[in-house]
Image (cartoon, rainbow over all chains, first blue to last red; front, side, top):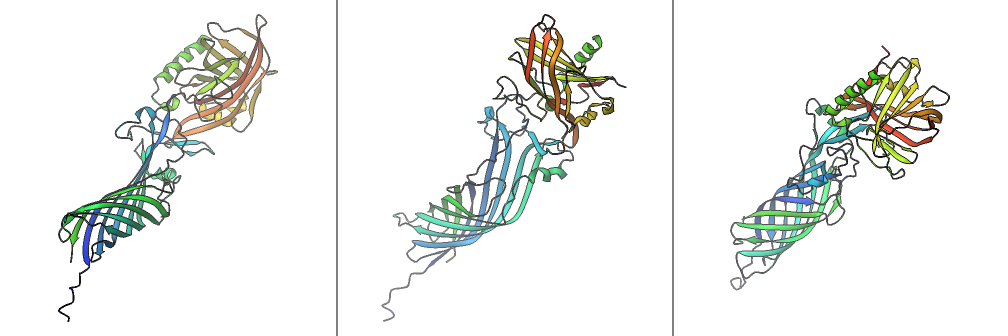
Length: 248
Length: 200
């Protein structure tokens, strides 16, 4: 009888190494420019940028039918934010941020008018996180090509943060950076996000494969990401290249 | 007079050669007073007023004025533009010797004192200079008031002193024409380049 039983299809186990950027839609801070480089009659606006690079190692368990998969692991994220001013006529400059521009940052207007000449303000944040992702792989007539849908959430814990001010006058100004950065929020210790999207994988499912993953960043569940406030919903995207290594 | 003209030319040359952008004019229109800069206390190096309802405003991209202190008076000259030609407005008003205006920093003593000079009955004098400038014979009423005098620090270094204030007056020219100066305001930066002391 036992010989008549169909062999049990095993669950699949994979390891992944993933890398890619995450773009977060953000709101530019409301800053009143005072004497920016454009000066006399120039129209100045705020230039801000936020980008996160994420790298993760993930374990995946896939159902015997190779449709449903659950993935989790450890994720490192480096978030970079920058605020500066740029002139409207240089809006289409490919660099986006013109390094030789600067403005007066007001640090005191009570007892006296005190300014620090600033090119830009940067915030560098480091996170360690735990992702949790559910995938559904579609059937494919091609053995070495698979498409899937994915829903993911992750919890990121702040493990380091550094605020940096690029002063016009670099000599001896570093100790006063706090006077500038204190006007901006630091990231919260924990931040969580939710995503939905999909992707594809190329390569035999029992061999090494490469995948491309595109997720829509639905919202930040909790926490401030720092000096640039994020938009509450549909807040960006996440693109990941993944290397699949089957372990069983 | 010749002495003042020489000083003025020297000061203008100094400010024109200055590479510090903090000395530049930053002109922001006042929507409530068309043609005039807003009243500000930021050192924008602007001034303006209506002279018989025609605008008189600061010109150039650098500091449009200078101050001269002597033993009894403080003279403030505004370099402006009015009715298509250059016009300088020169205020000379008595200043109490207790203020000790030795250098531009000593102007800070005027802050918070509600420093106001009523042109009548003091010996305040206003002069207009320019190719078509009328000759003011008498002042009927008016004042000049320093609303705020502030030290400006840039990158932890003394940059200048900003004086901000308002003025208006009514006067008569030598041919009996009335001149109404209204809505006057100034926001000007002072340092060694445009402050001279003859009290010493």
